[in-house]
Image (tube, rainbow, N blue to C red; front, side, top):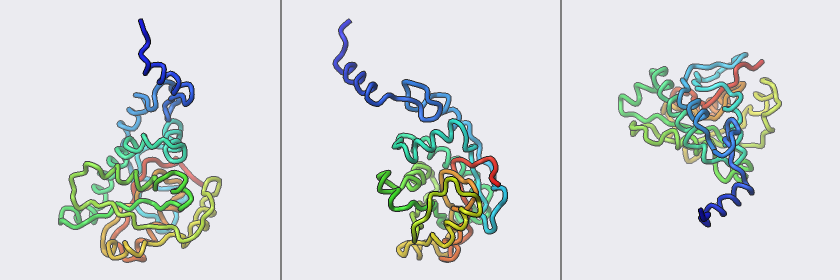
Length: 238
């Protein structure tokens, strides 16, 4: 049987950049059925780090940050696997349902026709340039896609006001000190957060330092109640 020319091209592409599942590494597929089922079957639950820092916003997450989930998130955030954004976005969408059900002020705002803001955690400019986009912002937009509540709005309101060190390898105290005072609300967004219940969105929550600092910035700008939703959470942090 003659080989179609496209098969030759695809074979060359596979040799140059072999496909593998971003979660488990299964060859021949960029996202396997088993890892897809892992995300589909995820169930959101309230989560708190150990120890829990003061002023930690109530947080819901769907998955433990380990094994296939950890590999997938790392590949998505720093490995160029933007094709995973819709998959992870669906996880956050399911978490948002739990967030709204578990936060009476947020649910009341939506029922009353008032806005609720989905606010992505900020990224350093260097990271955004290297990745070609604000990755968590893209995740937040993917999570909001298809949600019927017209008053649930994505608001990229936060920015880093100074350089911060890489959080990996830092303990809970080091992370808090690293981020303390480093986040503010963008000038153009200040009027839009006043009195508005907010849902912070991030990929992973570890010590809670990022969410604490983001929540502080929103509250100081006059926002309504702040809660958080993430794809995954570490099991325990001391």
